[in-house]
Length: 103
Image (tube, rainbow, N blue to C red; front, side, top):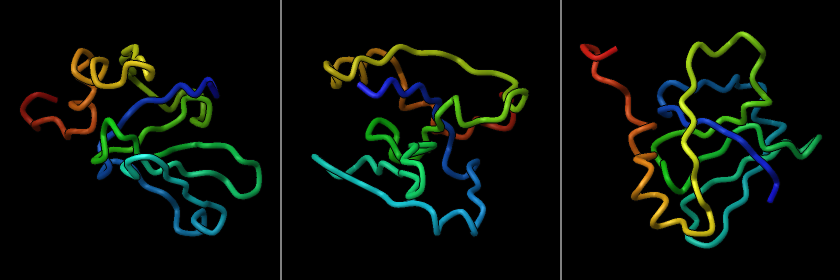
């Protein structure tokens, strides 16, 4: 509903500056697996821990400076049919660090 478009990265490849944490709050619901992080000042969800990839971070495209990303692969995910979409998209692999030999 909020029209959030994000990409998933392995959590060990995500860095949040320490002084940023004071501006964030986290909300969970349902299974409490997903951790929705909001800015306390503006309400934007710039990143969150998704239920589909609890070992990764989903980063909102619009919160990344232009020119920062070198590659993004888009996979459609149907949140209304979560279980089948999870199985069909292979999205779980997005939060895994690739083998150094395959990079």
